[in-house]
Length: 123
Image 1 (tube, one colour):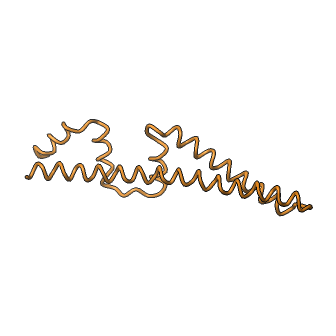
Image 2 (cartoon, rainbow, N blue to C red):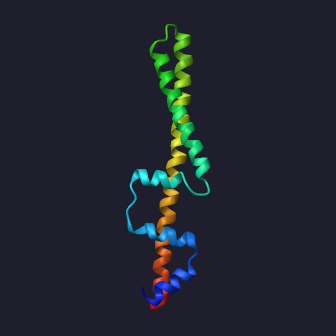
Image 3 (cartoon, rainbow, N blue to C red):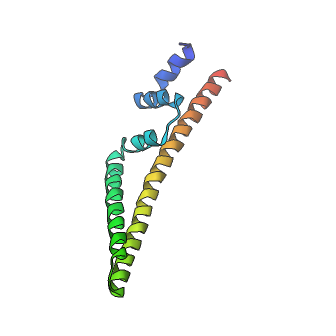
């Protein structure tokens, strides 16, 4: 290790150092989902994941009920329920993927922070 590495490690707290160790490998979809389910908002992300699964099940059930509806009133009632479940599922998944995107942006900001620290050391 160089003197710069020692000073950089001293300047960063333990969380930053652990985060920077992960920067060398590219993160796949499932690794990003795992990252989203941990951290300060991990509990909320787990709750949203469960709700998304339940809403998808509701959506499939309502679509099934639309396909077996016998009257127009029943058909339109279940169709509106299916539409509401579809929109809800989409919105929940949108939040989850935005959270994944936020984690990716934070990752890139840490890389830029590291590069700036190295440039200051050289400069």
